[in-house]
Structure formats: structure tokens, C-alpha cells
Image (cartoon, rainbow, N blue to C red; front, side, top):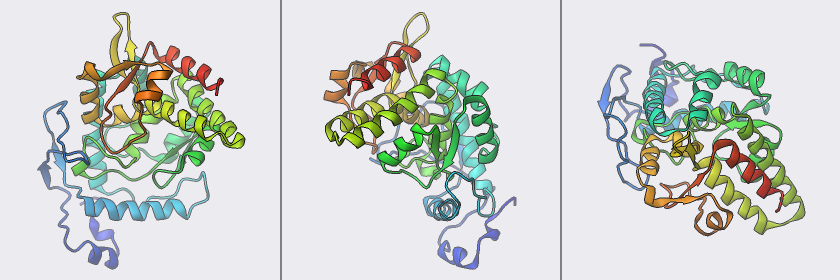
Length: 313
């Protein structure tokens, strides 16, 4: 059994004594969102690896401890290496997100995912190799982090062209949606954006605007900036191709296949990307699906529109 749980310490085994883990065991699991709702299925429910929340929580603790003890910007070794259970979760999620994205995501994202990020399906991406590829092709770097970080710290990283990225992966019970930003969220959501030049500029512009507003003490404008970031970068939709079909571009929507199907199959909750509408109906709630999604007129046009708006704050 590759990288099996025998590699855990005696303390860890005792801590996990009530969790029976067998790498070869596979369960047909219907994932639920944190609100208890089953997300709309985008493909036939696959046979998922058994990677329960208790084990995922312990692995998150161990991996985050390694990140926290490593100098900022450096990539730590994964304790015991990634487990086979974690690689199996990546394979299952990657296949599902890729299948859903092929149907629901915009062309620019798909090209960035396949030709830019160019992940291997079989294993959790190696952060050192990913960091080098991102640096070489975009001038950005990937910065390991331990989960959600305060907005001011996050925006400071963006201004410096560093993309925060966790190194742990979600349990099977949150297969299609998680409120906790795991490596799937960043690697399949945010990092492909960096290979789209207009969106790499957009990320850095958010960082610069946030610093300016924090230095000026304009908390109202800073709140509006956060609303726009979430509406566009996390949850944004966009008109795609000559027919103008609505597709996804937002990192949170794409990396959660359940929300992707929900957002794209409900045109009645789509609104045009207009500042007044974002300020009225936008939300920074990360605990479930959005009540409204905002649709830009094109990937580059969307980025330019938001960059121009930020200059007025």
C-alpha cells in the first residue's frame, strides 16, 4: 500500500483510532454542501476514494504545521509525502472539474488549464515544479499558505505577484463543494487565471488598489473592493465566443463542480456585471452558493472594466 497510514506516528494512529482507512477501499459517495444540500450532479457520481473528514483534518494540521515552520515563500516537504488517499482524491476531483469545465467554463480558462497549468491527472501537483512553471511563464510565484488569510495579507501577496496556495486537499464528503480553500481551489481555480495575461494584471491591480485604500483609511471603498473581487474573481461568469453563451471564469465556481452546474443552469440568477448591481446584490459569503452571479462581456473586457473601476476608488 503506497504511502499508507503505517507511516503515521503512534500518536497520530491513536488520534485516528476510530477511522478505518484502507487505500484500496472505494465508496460511492454523494457529496453535500455545508448547508446540507446535495449539489446538482454534473456527471455520474464516481466511485470516490475513502478520505474521511477526520483524516483530512489531521492531514491538514500536519501539512499546515510544515508550511508554518518553513520560511515564507519556500515550499516545505509534505509530511510522509502525499498519501495515496490524497492522490486518489485529486484524481477524482480533477476528472470531475475537468469534465464540468469542458462544458461550463470559458475558452480562455480551458486553454490556461490545459496549456498553462498543464497538471498531471494522476497525482497532487508538486508545488516546487508548479512554482517554477508559473514563474517561468507568467512572472508570478506560488506562495504556500495554511488556509484563508486576512484580506490585507492576501491582497499584499497579489500586489507582489505571489498567489497564496494551500497544500492540503478536501475530504470525500466535500467532493464537489468546500467552504475551506484547499489546494483544489487554488490549483484549479486561481492559478490557471495567471496564464491569462489580462487576469494576471487584474489580480495585481486588486493588490495595488487594496494597499492604496488601506493606507488612506477608506474602509468603505475597501469593502466595495472586496465585493467586486468576490463577484468577479471568485464567482464571475462571462459571455464566451461569437454566440455570447454564458460560461464560468470565477475560481470558486470552477473549482467546485457542484456550484458550477448550479450557476450555469440557473440563468434567472444572472445579472450583468455593473458596479451598482454588484454593490447591491454582491456578497462575500463563502458558506454556500451565491444568490446572484455577475456576467461580464468578455474575459479581457471584464478585466479591463474592473481595473478601470478600481482607479476611481
